[in-house]
Amino acid sequence: MRPNYRIIDHTADVGIEVYGEGLSELMEHAGEALFSIITEIDRVESSVSRNITVETGESEEVLRSWLEQLLLYFNTDDFLFSRFEIIQTDDGSFRCTAAGERLDSDRHILHTEIKGITYHQYEVSHDDKGWRARIILDV
Image (cartoon, rainbow, N blue to C red; front, side, top):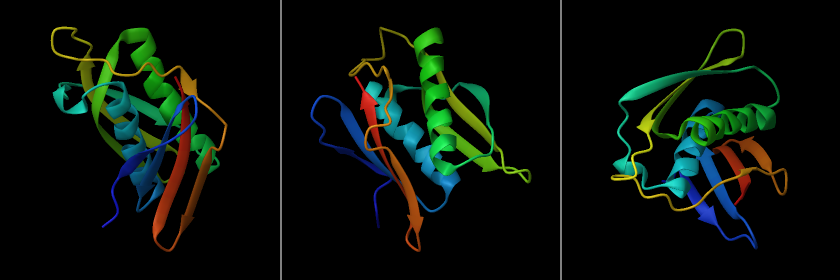
């Protein structure tokens, strides 16, 4: 069984490889990977949900939009996420729910500040084994 994601070596930044059976699952695992780099995700309670809509488009831009919106919540509202659910609707857009809580410095330890999602070596692909994404995060 393949893992949901793995951290990959990259010179100045942090990279992740993410896997999923479908694009929705790939997006869920990418959210999990992103926040596991930022903090200890198992300490983040999923007490508050945020609904996020990602418009239909090329898989690369759908995934990128999703991750950028999650990062925006973190950077503007100090919001950490630990649980993700994504459903592709009939019109091709994605209805996303991210659950978590506000940063609590008494309980949450921040590991890595992520400034953005880069285009460097960015790749989303799929084959008969499922979906795979390679994402380099600017730290």
